[in-house]
Image (spheres, rainbow, N blue to C red):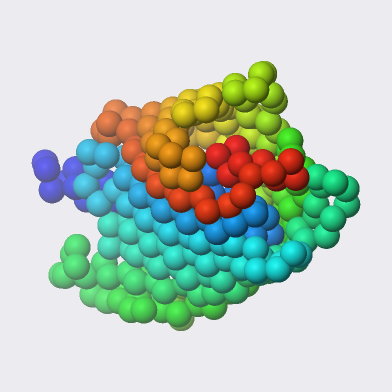
Length: 303
């Protein structure tokens, strides 16, 4: 019975992995703290060097559930230009992918505290899949088995408008649609997807801020989905919640240990049937902010 149950989870996880490849990039609940993951135009929009790292443990309690890690850096390199870099690894059972991307942005002033940033990125995915490690008695299927270090280059674009109080951005971070197996028939496809993100910071007083934000995600031939979040910030902490369309409700917490260093944590309560087998998902974020804070630019803890 345990073997049957484990096979059931493996099939489900592989289906979810297929869904991730076909429908969306690696997903983090604390997306609002690291927009560079979905929009290259965010690179260098702050007045200094920013480092962000995240670790995600999804569906804790289920064997071979997804585990993701990401690290990104970005900084302005000139009055109107920025550079960024991100490295991400995602593992779902026997399916793993590693992403490396470089970002470039060019900003144009449209007011005292208003700018438009245009972004480009370029990089590659490395895909590995070996179902033989789970069932060595099955004959090899060239469309699925033994994908070893499959190299898939890609590129993306984005635009990002921001002021001291709000932002809005549109991006397609992976423009090329590719099969991650050389013999695949189209079922194992990296599909182009689009992101529209926006947020606004309301000043309740000098130290208390409220920030609603939303990200819409669209993939051709798939339903439109969205993440909505609401965060309350004080000088030394932030707390909030997020709702991921038909997927999860998320609790968010952020602690500003120093003016430059912050720690974030999120907990996902799954809304799908997996909630009966999993204790939820956990995500940890660390960020260091070397940037300046001025009347033209919000502190990084807000956006």
